Amino acid sequence: MNVLSNMEEHWRCFPELQRLFTNASLGNDFYHHGGLRSPYTTGIDDLHDLATIVAIVGRGEELIRTAARRAATEEPAEYVARMRRLVSELDHLARHLHCFTEGFLRERIEELRRQQDVIGRALSQAQEDEHRRGKFMSTISILDGVRKLVKKSLPPDWKGSKTTVTAARRIIAQEIHLPAAASLMGGVSETAKEVKRSPSKLLWCFRQARKVSEAKPGSQARPEKRLEKAVVQKENGLGDNWGNQIPTSSGLSQNRGDSRRNIDLANKSAGNRYRFIELKVRRGTNNPLSAGIELLEYAVLYVWVRQNFGMLGGEGTLPDNDTCSALLHAKSVTLEVLAPCNYYAGFDISGMKHVQQELDRTCVALGEQVGVEMRFRYKTLVDFDLTQMPATPSREWLASRFEDSPDHYPSV
Image (cartoon, rainbow, N blue to C red):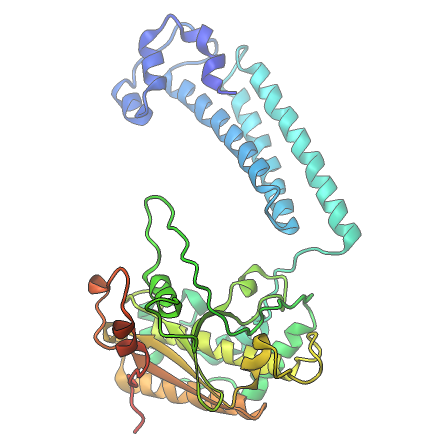
């Protein structure tokens, strides 16, 4: 119910006020008519108070509609948390409205309170259901232990994925030392004991996720996503030896971030050799250090899943005929950050070479734990200009940039 329709009888005789409230630019009109008062409202001093009432009640209605819309799609724990916040805010709004209203909005306030009671009962029921089933959603990520070790080993400027470009430059200028491979594996193993798992059937599955989702109105698809999808398309793509969106931790915990932690691109070649690629096409999106640490996390997950495949629901050995576990047979894995030259601009070259050496050394040690040759490299996406990227890249255009990418920091 629109609160303005409830007010109609109170300001029907006041055309100027009606025009203000039906005008889409309410904010501008309010400031232009700030001194206007209405003799037809009880307990309302001026237009500011009336606008406040409309805003408060509108917020209450929006909260209730949003809660109803999301209830069917949210995870239980998120729903419980949202309901708790909603009950608190509705209660605050209802109390706040009493400061402004007498008479004609009393019925609407009571309706908001009744809605609050309904939501409160739904909240209690949801909590009881979750306790009964013992399935409270965990916020623990399978990588929490690994991230704590990495954070401890790096300077205070390191803030994980939130590390700024400026902070990354300061860190890279120093001589950093990453945790030992054994410590990283211990970190993920300890965290694994604390989480509930239901591994996805697509975990470490080499696949082609070709569907291109339409961007929301007024927005554009991320250029990394457009380029990644172009690589794996049946027409004009680079062929079946290229995959994308490889799930690395889906179902290894109930953390939503783990379910979305996918490798951008993967390329398999003769001899069961693979490249795992973190694609970056825009300067300022993340930074080389964060991208490198992200690939290190993928390396830890790859080794841990390979070590624990039987425990995760496999046969105890890796089946040769299963495409979703064939990748776990790899003889060689190279983890690559692939980005244009300007992505690396402004970072100390000797510092970046040291970071590459540290990441490479750690990846080599991780690979040794499962008998796979594992390396790390920063690579250059050659001859790439985001502003000149074709809407539909040709096979030749893609091949010249992806099939033989040079090292950005060649080994001495």
